[in-house]
Amino acid sequence: MPDIRSRRAGWAPLGLAPFAVYILLFLVAPTVVALATGLFDGEGRFTPSTLAALAEPVVVDAFVSSFWVSALTALAGAVIGALVCFALLGVRGDGALRSVVDAASGVLAQFGGVMLAFAFIATIGIQGLVTRWLLDAFGVDIFADGVWLYQVPGLLLPYLYFQVPLMVITFMPAMEGLRPQWAEAAATLGCSRAGFWLRVGAPILAPAFLGSLLLLFANAFSSYATAAALISQGAQIVPLQIRAALVSETVLGRENVAGALAVGMVVVMVLVMGAYSLLQRRTERWQR
Image (cartoon, rainbow, N blue to C red; front, side, top):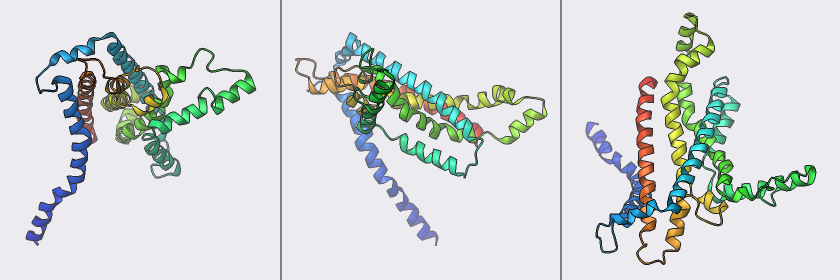
């Protein structure tokens, strides 16, 4: 029996092989290519001067747009998602409502890209169902001030569509980790319900909330397909700037601009995910 178990244990790591291949092809390899094209020329020589493109006004504006869209949708999604999680504490964990919310969050958190963009165009686009209904029934033209849906501000609603469910998925385990004994002990000491959340619940949940907030920021910052389908003109955020650099690199000496932009994105994502990892470790201390 020990020999059989040892042989099984020896084959066990092979179960991770598909996941390792996936990570290698879709995470490690693109990162290496981005760093190579952004820091080296075609002859393999180190050329940090390529990163000077990151200081160009158009690129800086794209990073600023990406930052404020990601920060705003992450903050709004985190607050709304946290309120949903708080409301779910009052329902049974194995009840029908909780099952529906969990299933919907799991699906909607992954519902992005061209499908999501088409859904918003068909609903609140220039000729969308809701747009035409508001105009015909009430005379309200939601595009009176411009075609905002097809510009950077138009990304806010579609991004919130998948940010809120993602917050519910990531933050709900922390909310469920609050032990009832803590609330009972606070009540025994004369602390009100609001006082418990202010002095006990909020400080304990703060690392988990901030970690989820950073995860939502990274999710929005790296989103491409939804923005590419909605914003048809211009490259107003970083992923669209990279696309523009890849499809229109006709100027001599600027062949590595896309790689430089990708390096900038990689740096931002590494910092954000590094902070997220630290906050997750802090959260796990009291969940054990």
